[in-house]
Length: 127
Image (cartoon, rainbow, N blue to C red; front, side, top):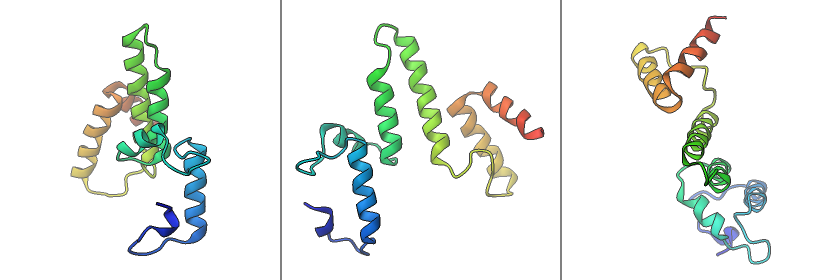
């Protein structure tokens, strides 16, 4: 099915559709001849994040170090933390002044990137 024929509830602008299609071609998610999803595109579609971030994680998994599982796992952890940080508007600016939400966000950050890294970022905030 061509994206132009898709029954959207509210039709996006043509330039936005063209840009999205160009992005998917650049990520090798669409076959350049048929316009269908490639196997990589199907893998990208499985992630519930943007296609650029999905492609980043898949690339890291693809080029990981198969000889050293520990090193490959660490690389994937850093990639996931990077994708999580890039998914936010700004990882350093909280949009809410609620102290409870700040504490919860801090717990999530510590889980994603580690407590030592969060402490370093908190030190950077003081300067």
